[in-house]
Image (tube, rainbow, N blue to C red; front, side):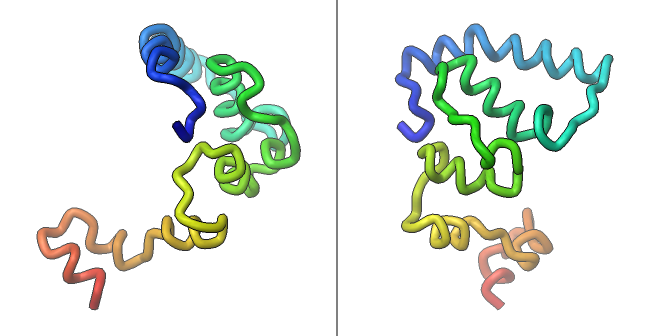
Length: 114
């Protein structure tokens, strides 16, 4: 379980937190908030939501405060599937410009190998 939640917890998340997240999204649509680097950025918000579901699951340190390190944090916390070392996992997750260019095309597999 990369996310650290058992099936019962996941069901509870879907039942109880799913609507909360939708309400939060609607709230932001009607009253936008400004992000700031240290206290209200994408990474701090995701960590806050995860820690509400599973208290203290994500540690707060510079990885949270500086979003450029969030991929490393996700790797270290087991939140993404590991495919070797961090560098190897990151390299395997890379989406090339070729893949983006040919996404959705019937001969996608052939085109990205040219």
